[in-house]
Amino acid sequence: MAKKNPRTGSTLESLLREDGVYEDARNHAIKSVIAYKLEEAMKAQNLSKARMAKRMETSRSQLDRLLDPDNESVTLETLKRAASAVGMRLELELKPSP
Image 1 (tube, one colour):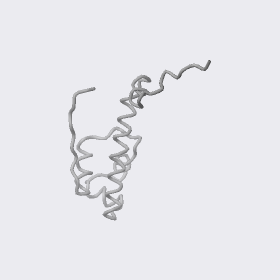
Image 2: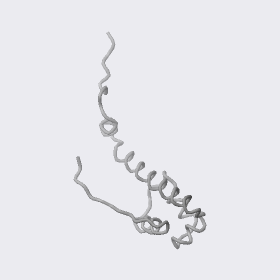
Image 3: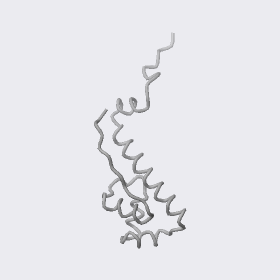
Image 4: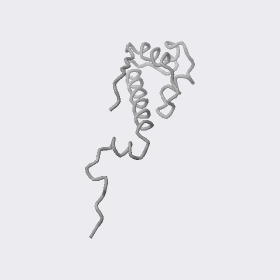
């Protein structure tokens, strides 16, 4: 008789928690979404990276780090400036842990 899969019916979140990688995966997903939304806003406004960096009063290399989904070391100030540069605002929310 075949063994029953112990993870059948589990959620991705519970699997990631069980494997101890939930927080890392969640942080990467958040950074990826932010980078994607900023790139989409830049495309919609026909805004080059050089012009975006100038609006943010930063360097192009700093903007590249911000748009890199694998680089999670971004400050809130940088995120706020980037959002403002494309006519958006950054919103953060604190919620109780599940």
